[in-house]
Length: 453
Image 1 (cartoon, helix red, strand yellow):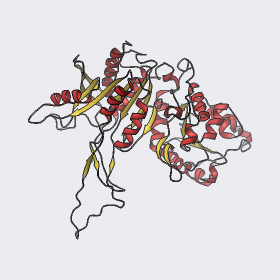
Image 2 (image 1 turned 90 degrees about the vertical axis):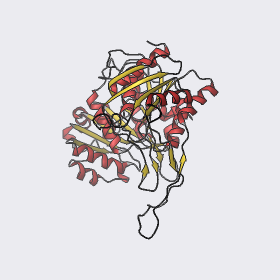
Image 3 (image 1 turned 180 degrees about the vertical axis):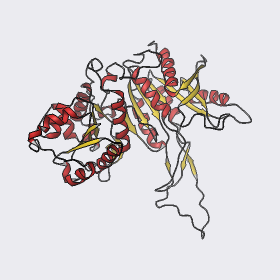
Image 4 (image 1 turned 60 degrees about the vertical axis):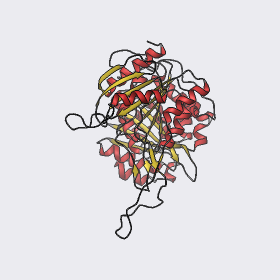
């Protein structure tokens, strides 16, 4: 596959060298187009050495090949990482003053932007409008990660990790380029500045009400959640012990990603707040990456305020270390083994329910319970008690642990078997099959509750 890697002028440009390596090691031919500003951070020699191809941003190099037309026509995929505020603005305005911008205008295949900039730049109304414009044209713009930025500041604007960009790019190509019909519909609304949603609203064709290509629900239904804003948490949190160790869990994120895919296919606008995952997130979802339970709490409470549906599928650590060692904890014969004191993490699901009540929101809240039985009660009994305690509308329950064959039944597996319990006593609804089939079943129950079936 012929890939064009555009590199914007930001400190995160060095990460794109790792992304380039992922593309080439996967067998793809990559042409790097670095902007004039980006070579202040990473030189042309690096791009040419890693790609084995010339790297330039001048329309006057290799004029005989008409590069400003040819490269865009021949590209199966264009990825811009980092996509700075300047690059996004030029692309949205259709400017064509260098090789990267002309290549973007000539593109016939899918285009993926991975933004990276300071938080205030990302949240500025101008950037939000540019992102909305690009998405309304069918261009795929990832959400930046949240974390440490240049200097002491932290917040949304960090370049997603190269592996995440690579996975999103491959998923985009495998899903196919949206057709003109898929892109039909009203443009994404421009959000107001100063809010989390100003980071970009509806994803491209899925948010316009049409299902993503190749992503229709397994039962053939569609548009069950058209116009709805859905927040989904997924993956596992990680609580640091020291700079190299953490307390984690076995969650792969597969079920949460399947829920996001199903909701997108049903026409919803999806924000996926995720911890560690073994699978790539869907490229059309708005993404927010977190590490710890406290980070997940902050992101979820903020996003839930404007959501019609909140699905809490993440595996959140119940406890975290009371202190984090500044240095690696050493294993030494002359000192006693360390004793790790744990403190309780907040109950995010219960807080989301309480926030709904306090704000008098019309909102459906879905919890997940990975339960095990013991000598006193079975998993179902513990789940029913959890449903009553949490106050959510629906609770999706799966029994975890080794099955009859001794293998793990849920975590990391491609299949799942759940019961969907309702706080009002309806049901329960049982679903089994692939995690996508289970996700479709959950979406159908949600749609029934919302009255959109």
